[in-house]
Amino acid sequence: MRNKGIMPSRLLKSWYICLSKAVGLLINNRNSNLILFGARDGAYFMDNSRALYEWFNKHHTSENYYWLTLNPALEASLKAQGLPVARIDSLKGVWLLNKAKYAFYTNRLRDIAIDYRAVPSGLKMIFLSHGQSIKNTRLAVNAGVDAGYRNDTLVASRQMAFAVSTSPFMAKVQAASNGIKPEMYKLTGFPRNDWMFRPPASALEEWQRFTGGKQYSKVILYAPTWRRKTPKTMMFPFADFEPAALAAYLEQYNILLLLRLHVQDLRDNKPCIDVVEQLVQQTPNIRLATINEFVETNFLLPYVDALISDYSSIYHDFLLLNRPIYFIPYDLERFEKENGFKYPYLDMLPGPKISTQQELLQHFSNLLNGDDQYSGHRERLSALIYTFLDGDSCKRIAKEVLAT
Image (cartoon, rainbow, N blue to C red; front, side):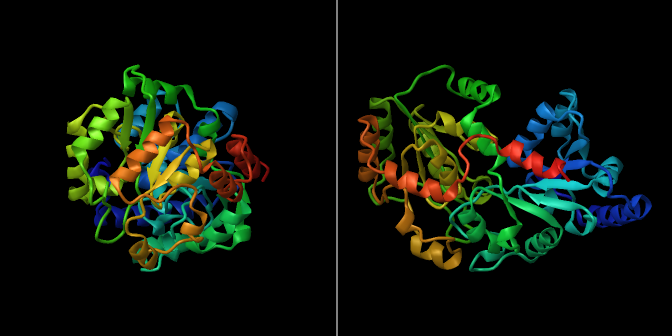
């Protein structure tokens, strides 16, 4: 889980904003080729920013680039690897922020700065996104967004050089969420999805450490989305939910079931955490696969045979593998009313809608028997979501930036 100590105080924010503006007056230079990277409010080294940063480190070592973070342990780790990194809240970090020409981010401006008001107006932002889900996000959610998050998004949209997308269809339906026009998107694909086509050696090492070399007949991942409002996410919301029966089935057929809660649910969704802990205690064939076990979801997905989800962006990523996906949209009506969707959910669902444990286990049996009736559904949706299926997203994004 994220270290709450990383969260800056109000006094630190004020000091940081004033310092950044003062440094900006002294530097007043946007002609450098300095490029910044950041993710998840400066707390983690992950996601599309990490994938692109590592690609730069491998293919463009002569370029001037830095990872910015608020996490002391992460700073030390990257430094130990000889990688360019700086603390967001350091004088060096503030200088880099005001010197840079471009900044890549995945969530919001706090990926590279303590407060959006400290971001220089001349810095060109490139939005890599955390994902492209069917659910409305950011400015487009039906129930409204937090004022600070809205201001951050609006400032970023005004300074955006471009945002990346995976297809014209997704650029069109995603634009309202980020307060930009569809033409502001570059059709490059997501950097982290390059891992899906060519898993890095570190991904295989993580998986082998996690499993201890044990082989399973199938690996299934359950990863629901986060609910912004109460009631919060429920896992296995079935009237016939029987943990012992589920555990017995998994052991009988040597299936590994992985449970991946959203990072926010790990913090404040106690009922859901209680269910997960109960299941993990039932059998070693049910294990946690949260951000604490696998920081990168797309390091894990290549080793997964089937996915269970609802409205999460993870099922768009998993489409790249064309493997079975099962859906548990138990609160569809409420979720659509409060959050909303970018395109018709049920009309384009690339897998079965499941409402009981008995149905779920039947689909597990179908998976074991190779009975896959939804391959065509997945292929049709994937054709809308993805223009490129080649694992070269990083190369296309770098070309856009380094050509200017």
